[in-house]
Image (tube, rainbow over all chains, first blue to last red; front, top):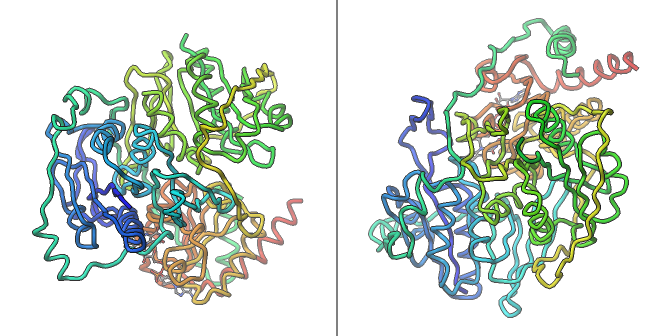
Length: 260
Length: 330
Ligand SMILES: Cc1cc2nc3c(=O)[nH]c(=O)nc-3n(C[C@H](O)[C@H](O)[C@H](O)COP(=O)(O)OP(=O)(O)OC[C@H]3O[C@@H](n4cnc5c(N)ncnc54)[C@H](O)[C@@H]3O)c2cc1C
């Protein structure tokens, strides 16, 4: 089974992110491999262990390859970095076009990625890649069984009022949600090995893309302004004793906040 | 005048979902400024009641009538919507940031080669019909105002409870019934089963009020206290990753970075410490109440009202008191 996993290194949820100016953020240098992408790698490895084959981790990132090394240390076979200065400022659709250009002629059975990246939290790239490649996708899966013979997958997807079970022919792309798997913690030995692992570098020209097809100029959406989160007024601590505090809380919720 | 403001209407068991009415109401407000037509698009068969209920919320209702659209799959929806969008070229296409919206919109936008802003917590429009979307980044540590290039439609998905529902009895939408020519062989995926969540409560992303407990509740059976409170308030029950990882609660009820973002009007947290991973999921709730025994618990930094106290004492008293107060209202 040929499996590709799209991965990304993102700021840790604990990293401090602040607005520096209308057009610039200040991001603390504290990164980790996107939580949902690790689940996606795990999904690929589980299938490889069952059916044999190969897991390739793929990232589009000019600077960071740590997510690829993480994937290798978990057990992925190959790592590919798409890197080109022209990609700077690309919106998720340009990213998807570029990733698809790489994947286009590869003999894959499955592509996995996280439900969303914990930076822009957009969740666009996965479904958009599937569209470019003309294969089905299912977003935010929490269960997966693959029938390699029939070339189809039985997938559980979370919806608002329950869980939906779908049958989907392969090749397909699935975005992974917590609950699908717990990603394995790599052995120290494998982490060391991954530090030295060969990473294949791919640029735009080798994908047959021109710089004008990507980057800020090709973007359909544009961030006009960064803003700090709306400020909450300071907390009102209700200091009365029990049970007066409960009565006061209800009064405030009804008369001041007007929410019940 | 720019072309229409369209909303993809979601429905369940033949009824229109709240988020769709919220978006149509926003569309009508926008149209007062721009003069645009408001269009509701819905797909599926047996939707007479849903379609009729929409007439005070739009100028046109495009009902694409075929059994293949229920239950939702992206392939069927794409096949149904794309020709309609190409024919009418709406200026704006909105949807809910729901399991359907998040599955469909990125793919639809890629297909239409247009721009899409996901998971918005605000929208504004200029007189020329240019849309600006507001959305949280990095889980809500910062926000961004996002605009579109010249591409159309301008697509966005929006969270629950961002806009208020407002009926417009003066409008009476024209219903346009469409029978699509669907090639079912193109539909690759098939929904073969559905496991309905227990109980009748709304999903935590949809509920107006969410009450939640974390590890401070100490044992899974004590969630009964929280459920009783939820019943009185007609609320849904949320939780933290800590209790989900313990196996006490279902993942679908986890609030936060690796769970769900909620935007309830009222969120009440009991025995929840307020780790950044958790509070990132409640950033757009209107009013937040926290009850914790630890006066230094971080959750108080994100709350509007706080009580330093024992949840085992507070929650049952709150439930009883609310029963009384709410009964007096009736
Ligand atoms: C990558 C990553 C993603 C994560 N994603 C999420 C996520 O999506 N959602 C999430 O919630 N967490 C998430 N976490 C975990 C998060 O960091 C915290 O560990 C978790 O939120 C803590 O849950 P808690 O508040 O229930 O438990 P605790 O932190 O243990 O807090 C329990 C609280 O209960 C109080 N308490 C105890 N007894 C009582 C009593 N009788 N009455 C009142 N109060 C009492 C205590 O004072 C304490 O404040 C994530 C972590 C990581 C690393």
